[in-house]
Amino acid sequence: MKNLFGLTLPELETELKSLPKFRVKQIAAHIYKHGMKTFDEMNDLPKSLRAEMSTRYEIKTAELLTQLDSADGLTTKFLLGLSDGAAVEIVLMRHDYGNSVCISSQVGCQMGCKFCASTLKGLQRNLTAAEMLGEILFADEYLRRFGKTLDSIVVMGTGEPLMNYDELMKMLRLLHEDYCLGMSYRRVTISTCGIVPAIKKLRDEKIPVTLSISLHAPDDKLRSALMPINSAFGIKSLLEAANDYAQTTGRRVTYEYILIGGVNDTEEHARRLAKILSGQLANVNLIPFNPVSERDFNPPTRNAVQKFFHFLNTHGIGATIRKEMGADVNAACGQLKANWQNQNH
Ligand code: SAH
View (tube, rainbow, N blue to C red):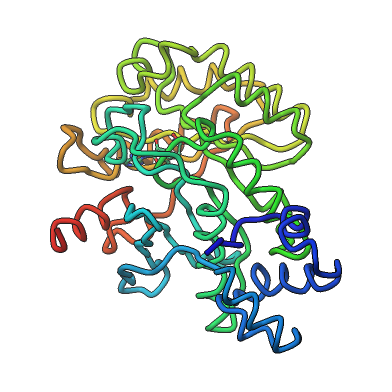
């Protein structure tokens, strides 16, 4: 049986070419906007058509394997199973300014950042556009059951989205269609470790998504030690590409900076960071390192976080401290999956 989930309207029209266009549009809206998983639910279609569709097609998307709610009810983490048995995590966050979902772009990751749990087993495979959209629609459908809406999306879970560029673009364009969620590009954030040629390509797509750069160090020596990608694309070329992205799209770039105790969290690091970012259309988001058992790093002290934050803000760089959400649901990448796999395999 052929799976229709993930096809764009023109692709559905080609696949269902015996049907009038308005019917195909109805079906597209039922699949994406209304979250229907069977043709039987589509009761504005003739019964005979529903029966025929059911013999030839299916609407298959990610299925829930397990879920974990934080004690404060603000964060829910879901482990979703894909058709080949792979599993991905998504995190739903309920902020005062709206509901947001953090999705994964790959199964595993090849980037090798030294502080990150997602890359420990390398890259298994890219996710398809349909699978990424499935992650988003899962969160949307879950919220709608409680009368809530999904307001924004961050591609900041497992994987490097810009290493899965074409499928990412296909997903973003589909998400934006009015027969799908009609999601404004401005409500989407793409987080990258700094694939400079892909940032330049993204700039030219004319889709004003927000770009978030995982910077994590103010000089090439330290950044290359923490993030191998920096040996290919150093800080200077990364900042140039990011600045150019901001100028062209008018979208302020966010720099993520994990504070790791004793590694990159001193006043001297803050000074160098302020220096390299001065004059950029940028915000810095400080993230206290989330301890990963396989990684030999420590979180920063509360005092170090406050000092770093204060230094940036008094030296012309707008900074925020990432609100710690869902520490009790292991919001650090990859941990729910690891626990589930240990119990079930
Ligand atoms: N590959 C993309 C998106 C996935 S990582 C990127 O690098 O941006 C999402 C964010 O989580 C990145 O900023 C990453 O550096 C950060 N991160 C990874 N491990 C972390 C940890 N143990 N504690 C805090 N943040 C972490």
